[in-house]
Image (cartoon, rainbow, N blue to C red; front, side):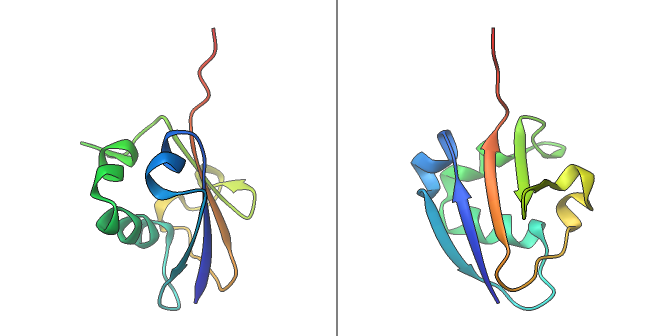
Length: 91
């Protein structure tokens, strides 16, 4: 299945603005991130920490934060659009 990944801010610098990723049917967000970081190892520490997904990373599937879905276990389907954002920090 084909998944479109859009990256913003620091993620865009490493992963590019948009990428098309081909995954097997039934894949989840965790597998998508592993595929992305396998090809761009410098992205791994921006996305994952010692305890898994970093708290300052926001991932949206079809416009919904994965925290309100099934987290990294959120299943993906053909044509899904996934967006990677660093947390917004203001002052």
